[in-house]
Amino acid sequence: MTAIFLAGASRGVGREIAKRLTAQGLTVVALLRSDAARSELEALGATVVIGDALEADAIASLVAKQPFDAVISTLGGKPTDGERADFKGNRNLIDAAVQAGVKRFILVSSIGTGESAAALPPQALETLGAVLAEKEQAENHLVASGLIYTIVRPGGLKSEPPRGTAVLTENPNIAGSIHRADVADLVCRCLGSVRSHNKILSAVDRTLLFGQPEFEDFTL
Image (cartoon, rainbow, N blue to C red; front, side, top):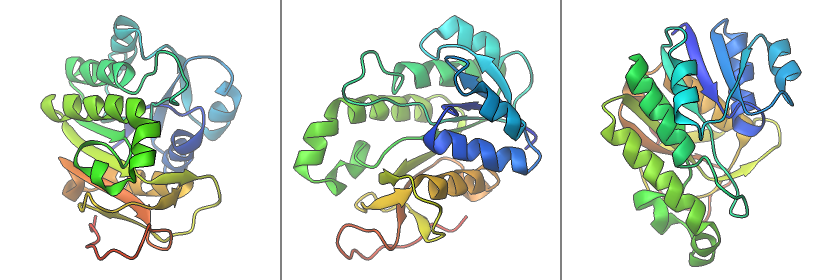
């Protein structure tokens, strides 16, 4: 891997991924909707491009500008947002990757989508229902795209420093919390792992689980 197109790098998990990939010496092209986070990302060594993931033609043009080994997306929104990028933005990115001949796509989604809905309490599902439905559509679109995919579904996100106790599992019934920096670590490890190809993985901190479930770690 040498060149990565990264969407959602302005904050949160995406920003943490940008830190790690640039530190590894990879070429990172970060998609932003505005210049607000440009200086911080350029200081890390990333190249910033401005565009809206909801505009399909513009995104297709940006992804096609140079050869990329992979696209990573952490795009998402809140239940109170208007038109969110959870499905439409990710769909446009997935389609752009296919058109540009990119082989690999990593999507950061959420526990509560697809078969992992059973892992969340009814109140959480009700609150996050609209967002989770869009994320599930994005997951399904990616799986059907023909790209080599990895879908990482983190639990409840925290902003504290990394703990180093985060794990991946194929068990869809696991839920808990996880620090954003630890999600970024797991995503970057997936990027270099053939074992993560065409996998859907839940990401949790084993010290922050809901209940005390037994599950098997997914080893990269």
